[in-house]
Amino acid sequence: MKKAEEILTLLSDVYGVSPWNLEQIEADLKQANTEYFYLYDDQTLIGFLALQDLAGELEITQLAVKKAYQGQGLANRLMGFLADRPERLFLEVRVSNQVAKALYEKYGFQPVGQRKNYYQNPVEDAILMAREGKENV
Image (cartoon, rainbow, N blue to C red; front, side, top):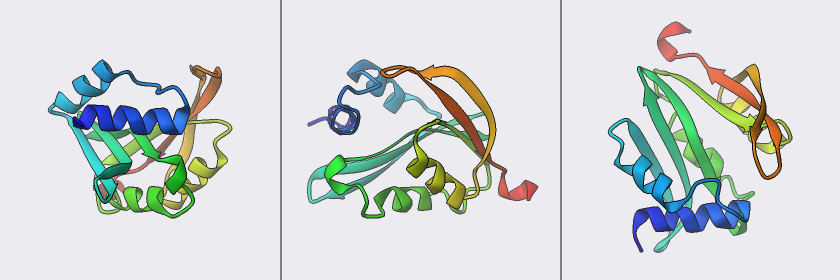
């Protein structure tokens, strides 16, 4: 199975219907300004973190762990890949996703704004969170 197909399978497991389609994932993987970090159980992709470098700031575009593996600290492990990154980091998270917000706060992210009706299925606001770069702290 190709990497994009593995990611689509994982996102479909997590969300029921993946927020990204196969073509979007394939295009993202080909971008020179994206980085992916993966976790596997044997040959099965069980989690990943995707970043996009936007002129020296990093956006977390995806953080997902297969449902059967959630609650085992794997998202925490993925966030660990960013612990020593000097760049400013930002992300969007659903207003209702308390577990994710707590994880991001643990890594120094703070709410800096809100985006109305940012998410679909269901429609929900996003909280914009940021962690200042290490060189600015």
